[in-house]
Length: 119
Image 1: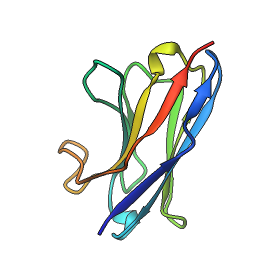
Image 2: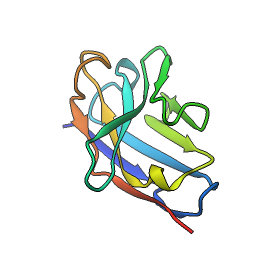
Image 3: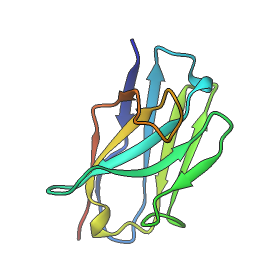
């Protein structure tokens, strides 16, 4: 049984930073691509960033240059460093684990963590 547990969300002012973390268990972590999605109220879920098993990364245009995804295969964790946050980054952020590659929907989702950017 795969479990993904996010942490690190919260309230931050515009221009501030937050770091989200996700602890994974249940499968051999290093073999699978990981990703972060987000969903804002009234909007569709959006893919924010992905990192493959070979550490190749990809980002949504809206976060390029501001967000950084990384993974630690020794600790089975994936992180999302978010800088220069904007009010439009406000959303529930979900950690995901892919099975067949990042072009297919994720196999597993975490429970989500709220990020609110507001003054």
